[in-house]
Length: 313
Ligand code: B12
Ligand code: SF4
Ligand code: SF4
Image 1 (cartoon, rainbow, N blue to C red):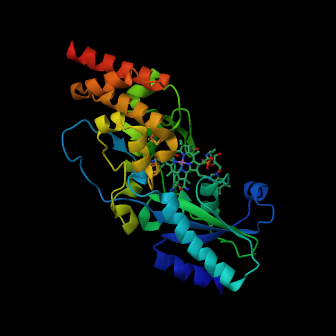
Image 2 (image 1 turned 135 degrees about the vertical axis):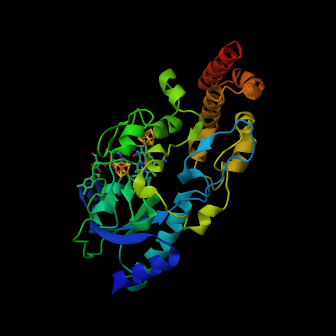
Image 3 (image 1 turned 30 degrees about the vertical axis):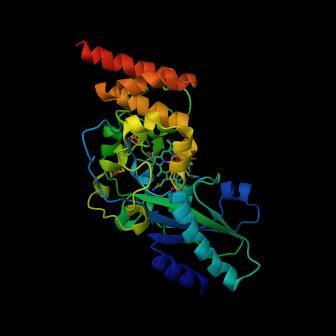
């Protein structure tokens, strides 16, 4: 049967799980011909690595430390798609990873591959929530999973208590405006109270996953994410700030963070250097304070002020 073939190829490809969800309303809005959604999860947890030296360094969330997960997962899903088209050459089958407007977490839960934790993330077997999600939307009528998994949070609430901005207002609901992951990704001016909460984060935030007891003892399992790709786990903030457009273009190929653009990365690096109160970073910050991008210049000026205040203490 086609699902057995897909399951066995998925295992060979190193996918953590595969299941079938019905084509819900949001999927039909985008793909009116859809009947079923094949949902897949891929573990992205990279091996832990400490900062290599004492230079001022940023912190990158685990999903963005290595090669762009969109590329890796898309390729694996394309390979599953080939199985479908090999058996049903006329079938419609569209691969989606992250950027299509379909509710990937909801679909993953409906497909039975995992359950949603109170930190809003989907947990998949031994991989905890360190998985990314992707789908094949198809017009084939496949039997959907009849047994959704139960949530295992019990009375824990650790993620809600430890979120630096209290963004998890109630189980499963994240206030996007307060979420530091979003703060590092959106353009423009960061409100000063959120700048302070960012610490040295330059892309994404992992706190609500790091503190989760269900994520303890998870081991890295996808070899593609063991290889270091820009920006890595702890990028040098001075290098990030002084990166020219050419440097940027040369580095961001295959990286997850390129899409936020050079200005946003340099803005985040400036805030991180300010929060680290790094005297070593002042000269780079002074250059940024003259930047043509007003947001970059303003955050650099803020960071310099913060460092000067510390020096005068
Ligand atoms: C926008 C977005 C964000 C925003 C907003 C996140 C949010 N919580 O809403 C920001 C930038 C903050 C963000 C952060 C992160 N994100 Co994000 N994000 C997305 C994106 C593109 C859309 C999500 C969305 O529409 N959110 C809006 C809310 C209202 O929808 P929702 O949370 O999905 O769920 C609602 C409904 O779907 C419904 N629902 C949910 N589950 C179920 C189940 C059933 C059975 C039913 C009936 C209904 C239902 O109720 C919910 C509340 O209304 C998805 C990809 C995608 N296309 O889905 C990735 C995605 C959710 N993100 C992902 C990741 C990895 C992250 C981060 C961990 C990255 C990081 N380390 O910084 C953080 C985690 C923050 C957190 N605790 O949620 C992964 C999640 C993987 C996983 N294991 O769950 C996804 C799926 C991308 C991917 N392809 O892997 N993200
Ligand atoms: S990603 Fe960070 S800021 Fe966002 S909800 Fe989780 S802990 Fe809070
Ligand atoms: S930290 Fe606790 S409440 Fe939050 S997702 Fe993990 S188990 Fe659930």
